[in-house]
Length: 274
Picture 1 (cartoon, one colour):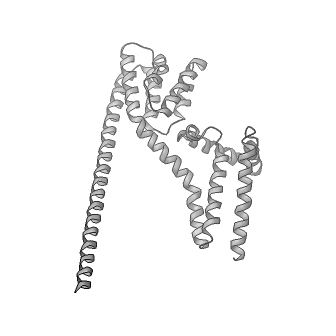
Picture 2 (cartoon, one colour):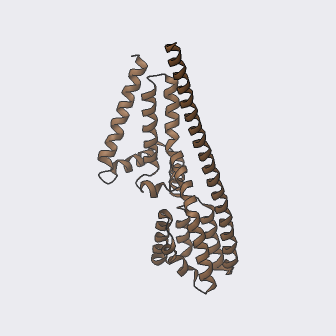
Picture 3 (tube, one colour):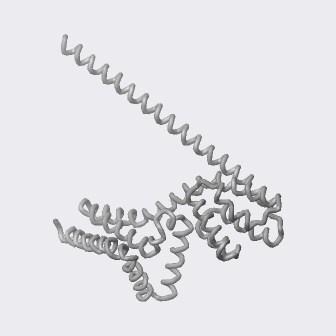
């Protein structure tokens, strides 16, 4: 084993022990180590840039659903430590084959959690479409009936089934009761999603508080969601058709292979007899 491989393994072992100690001690004691790392990051880096980095990633994690899926303890610093740990693990394992493989694996694993969060957010957005359309229709009907917008928003969670959206609406209802400030409650609600329909809904409600023209806007957006659902269903149908074609080709190849094997076996058997 070369010196490079030995040093790589030693480094990865130290980092693994350190990160494992964070998980076993710091998080079990209320996140003291996590908070200490965040404070150290603020002291080491330049204050303005450090705070901007922390706030940017905190908003990104919240809007893409990481706080819902992984918990609020997985903040920017913890998320960065997880990415570093995965990168070092990939470098340590694949560097045995070749240093280039280790570097490529480290880069890929470093960005893997980011891709996972983006994928989960896109999946949530697709699953939210029926509930969002139902929300638009419910708000449209209630506003036509003369129900105040705040009261209508506070009762929306009862008609939603997507877990992430339902939890956010429950929090919104609680904020409306505690704060009695629709603008702040909607800003907190909007910050939990990276979804243009949620952004449009919050904007329409704020405009409705000023102009009272929410019904027509809600109707237009519900039609846009209907078109979006049709496009998603078309994509699912195309994916299903491709899967069926792939399975049919697989069955055909398997049958042809069996026939070819039987023919070759029969030919060898006949040649042995003669």
